[in-house]
Length: 100
Image (cartoon, rainbow, N blue to C red; front, top):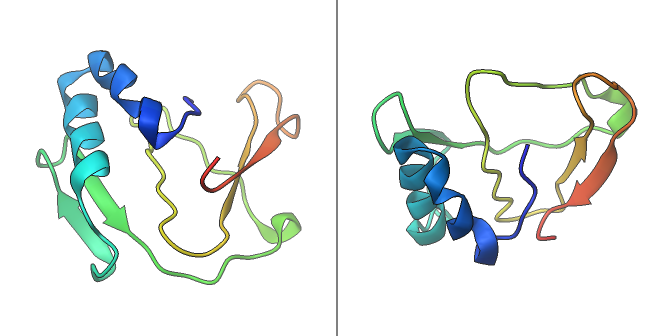
């Protein structure tokens, strides 16, 4: 997982053409009024998911992991947090607040 800021996100475009397309979209799209759903960027190779939900306390959350794709989270509103931990050391993570 890459943790960065939107101002430094452009450095990661070299990872792949799909990642570059997703980054360009993340840096230019205004999804603030978008309805929840899936928005294709490069077909199934790069897409945006718009979700809206009430978050749960950390002790009620299940871990999430990916091996076939990457997330570029953008918390437009609210006070969402992401808890990170290496896949080989569950529970050894740290919390990143949206916008950091």
